Amino acid sequence: MDLQKIGTKIRVTRVGKGLNQENIATELGISITAYSKIERGKTNISILRLDQIAKCLDVSVVDFLIEQEVRKGEGMESITSNLEVENLLLRKEVTHLNKVIETKDEMICLLKKSMD
Image (cartoon, rainbow, N blue to C red; front, top):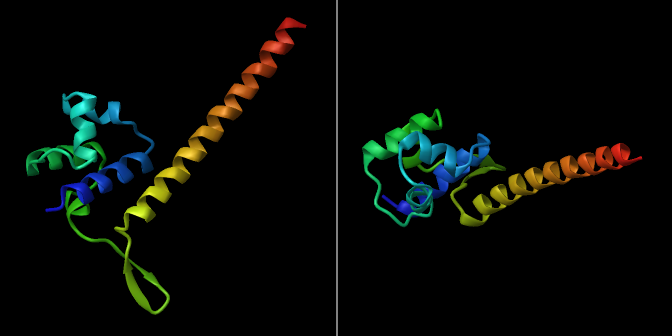
């Protein structure tokens, strides 16, 4: 069992559902630091804990344990590449940051109007 791959799959699933580490750590009754170590593959994870995380994320434990494949052209390619995962996470983070910037700009406009 590759802890780093499992942790990456957990992180991708969590981010895809719009949750942060604090949400999951609180539900599990553990510290954010302890949960972060799970996502980074820095701590051994029991099947029981993996099952708890899967329930928090509304997925199956199997989703974290199997290689996921997608069709590309004629053949099959694994999507467990760290670069692909990091690219997905970065795109989601950019989307989130753009929303934050948009909200900030709206607040600035409202503040300016209230000062006039």
